[in-house]
Length: 494
Image (cartoon, rainbow, N blue to C red; front, side, top):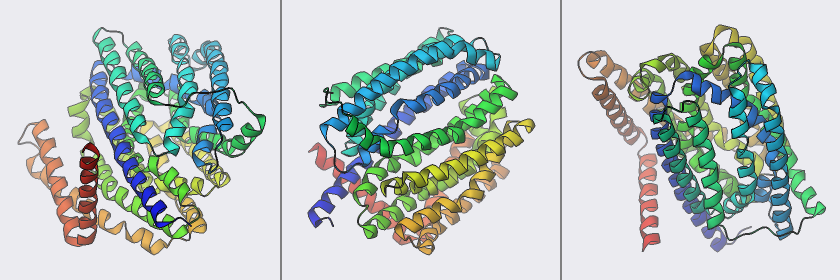
C-alpha cells in the first residue's frame, strides 16, 4: 500500500500530467486542424487518398518497429539501465531494416493498388521509421515519469514545423508531395526536440536477459498493435483497393476529423491513465475511483462534442473544407457515433494493460479485428457510407465484452459506471434539440458562417445549463477541477 505522501505525490504528478498532456494534445491538434483545413482547401481528394494508401502499408510495417518494448518500459515497476540500452539499440537496428525493406517493396505495393504514383511516396515516407527508432525509448521514459512537458514541447514544435513546410509546398503547387514533406519535416523535428530535452543517452549495456524481460510483456503489445492495425486500417485498405484513391480521400477526411476530435477530448487523460493506473494496480479501491473519474469527465465533454459533430457536419464541411468535400459529410455523421463509444470505453484498455493483462487485451483486439474485417468486406460493395456504418454497428455489438473484462479485474460497480453517463446523455440530447430548432427557424435567414457560430454557442449554453440544473454536484466538481488546474499553473509560474 502507498503511504499518504506517496499517494499525494502521485496525484500531483497525475494532475500535472493531465495539464501537460492537454497542452500537448490541444495545442498540437489546434495547429493540426488549422493546417488540415488549409491543405484540404488547396489539395484534392486524390492527394489525400494516395497518402492514405501509402499509410496503410507503412503503418503495417511500423507495427514491428518497437516490438512493444516502450510500453513494457512504462509498465515495468523495476527498471534497470540495461533495459533502456537494450530497447534503444533493438529499435534502432529494426528501424534500419524496416526502412530498407519498405523502400525495396514500394514498387510492389504500387502495382498491387494499380497506383504508380505510390512508389516514390512510399520510399520517401519510409524514412519515418528511422525517426521512430531514435525516439521511442526517450518517449517511454518521459511517459513513465509522467513528465509530459517534454512530450508536449516535442509535439507542438513538430506540428508547427511540419505545418509550415506542408502549407508552403501546397501553395507552391507540389500537390501530394506537400503531405509527404509535412510528415518528414515533422519527424525530423520530433527527433531533434526530444533528444535536446532528454538527459538520458544510450549506453552499450545490451543484454539478452533484459530483452527477454521486456519482450515477455512487449510481445503481447505487438500482437495488440497488429490487431489494432486491422481495426483501424482494414477499411482504408478495402476502400482503396475496391473503390480507388478518390473515394478513400473522402472517407479519410471524415475519419480524420473523428481521430482529431478523439485526440482533443479523450486521449488527454488516456495518456496519463496508463502510467497512473499502473501505479495503483495494487490498490483496487483507488484504481476504481480513478477509473470512474476519468470516464465521467471524458464523457461529460465527449458526448456533446460528437453529437454536435453529427448534427453540424454539413455546415462544418462547407465552412472549413469547401463544397468539394461534401461527400465526406455522411461518413462524418455516422462515425460520430463510434466516437461516443470510444469516449466512454477508452480507459478500459488502460486498466487492462495496467493490471498486467496484455493477453486479455490481445484477445479483445483479435475479436475486434476479425469482426471489423468481416464487416468492412461485406459493406465495401455499397460504398464508403456503408463501411462507416459497419464500423459503428460492429463497435456497439462487441462493446459489453471489454467492460466485463474490466469488471472482472477491478470489481467495478456497473450501476455506478453507467449512472455517471446519464447527465451527459440528457444534456447532449437537449443540446441537439436546441440546435435542430435553431436550424429550422434560422436556416435561410443568415450567412452560413454566422449560422454555424450561432448553433455552436447555443448548443454550449443549453448543455451547460442542463448539466447545472440536473447535476449540480458534477457541475461544481468540474468547476473546482478547473480552478485547481488554474491555481496549479499559477503556482508553477511563481
